[in-house]
Image (cartoon, rainbow, N blue to C red; front, side, top):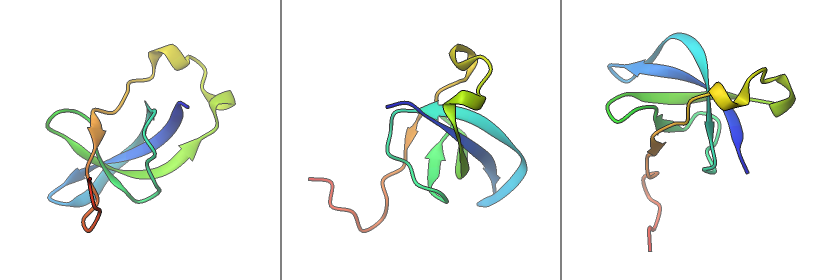
Length: 74
């Protein structure tokens, strides 16, 4: 299921600037750090209902999820 998330980019480990909307099929949680692009990280700042997205086909997808510490990846 596609989810639309609000992401704030991280600079030196701290959220900076405004929030941007991205989409993902991953099970991300509020406050989780994600890879917005191959080189940029961001923090999930909120979720957006699909009905509020004007042009869903134009929303960029996040690059990936960062494994949470302490999680068993087997």
